[in-house]
Image (cartoon, rainbow, N blue to C red; front, side, top):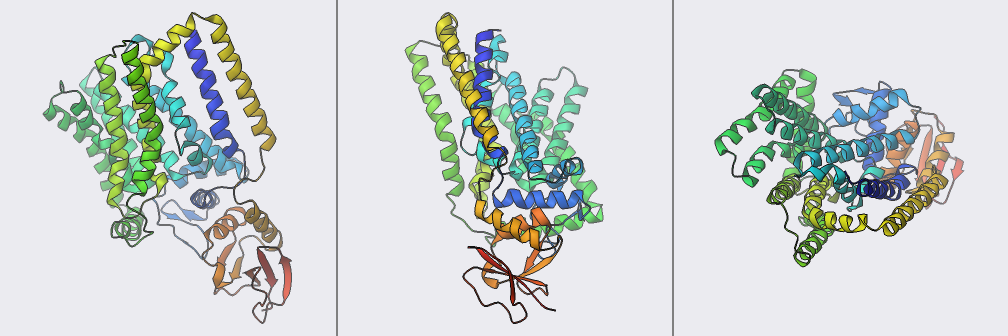
Length: 472
């Protein structure tokens, strides 16, 4: 192993981690979905709601059917052992990022040909970190983060099964892969099914494999998944939950009855994500021709396999009229792996050239180390400060200081759909909001200065809100 190459990639990966992930993981404030999911996980940890009856607030999604519950339950484990601060969901996101990075490196070691592959195992991790959406997703506690862990694990287990030396090991790994896919489905629903196509994609990229044999092997993880579904269908709480989930979320989304968005949303997000890998791949192709580098055919096969896996994780999302750009996050590791495999030959060539120039190598390492140190220092100085939704969070904390925990606040109809307000009050203080609730408190926007007749005492006045105390 070339220690210079390995050390440089370690330093670059640490630098990317510090610059891209740490600022969002150490500051307060998140995207609506991340706050909502953290509130549900915390509630679950405190016994409010159950695994098959996730609880959000007393007035909004008292049973949360928007997503299956496994992701919330896994996050709730941290809330059971750590103090209830905003760092809990941030730590959970950090753990999912670390797990995904490790899985990417392990998958690389399975698919990258050549004895030198371990030297470059951090190359796909580095590219994954710098691709658009990665830093944003882990800063915002997105459900796609933990989904990505289980889909990566499912594909890794399939790879281990495909290269197993005995029929028993092969069946065991493929069965475990099906269970990992089942876990992914229990986190995010049907979008997690794409690992089931991996064995057929493996056949497509390596025609030496027999199609009939590949189909037979594909049935093993599918059978494991179907067994889990069958068992859950006989468990009444689980079957009731999934009936509601399918009706309210999946079918309504497919019928265009949920949040509608442009059919081009996924394509635009995918295009933006693929821009960097595509540019690197084109540059690598041109440099390989210039330097007369001939890539191992096995490298191209593995790159094609990873590209197809990424497309299988993203393009089927076009079926639904409900589209969000962040839905493609679980596909990003596969595009990073594909691009890293494609650019590996010229990268190896460059590192070989640098390894003989001690001065240049030393300067690069020193520069990376200094940059990483500066980045880490800046992150520590900003740790705990509010980033996103600073004004709203400040107002929420003022409300929480005046209103008892677990209270319901009556609100003006004009702010009833300020979902971030619902989310932060639920996450920080378990406070619920409703525009028709009977409550000793009334909250209105600052622009509305006339409260209901029984709510005369203004106990909080800010540029955003007025909070009144009401008589019974």
